[in-house]
Image (tube, rainbow, N blue to C red; front, side, top):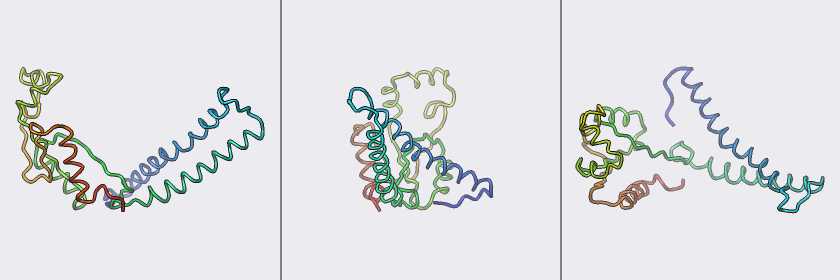
Length: 190
C-alpha cells in the first residue's frame, strides 16, 4: 500500500477509514449471533428457551464464531496479499475524456496496479444501443458536455486491453477482462 503524503491529518483519516472498514466486516459477524439466537428459538423449530437450551445454542454460536474468525478471516482473508491490499481487487468503470487525466490516475498507482481497458465502440452503435435516448437528448442540446457528442474524447494511446464491443458479446468482453487479469496474476491467491 502506498504511503499517504498528506501529513498527520491524511494519516489519521487513513487509519479511521481502515478501522471503519474493519468494523463493517466484524460488525456483520457481531450481529449474526443475535439473528441466529432468535431463529434457534423460533416456535417453528420446537426448541424451548430453557436454561440448558439457551446455553447450548450460545455455545454453538460462540464456537462457530471462533472458527469463522480464526480460520476464515485470520488465516485466509488477512493472509491474502495482492500487493498489500488484503486480497481485494477493485474494478471501476469511468469515462475519462482526456488522456492527461488518465495519465495522472496511472501515476498515482503503483507500477502495474492501473489497468486501462479501452471499450472501443463506434458512436453509431452506442446510439442504437441507448435505451434511455441520452444520445438523442445530447444531440438536441438538452444534455451539455456529453462525451462523444458535445464533448471530446481522447482515445488512449496504449491501453492494456481493448474491447471491441461492436464485434464482441458482453460475455466475450467480460471473459477477455477476466483472462487478462488471470494471466497477469491479479486473480491468483498468494
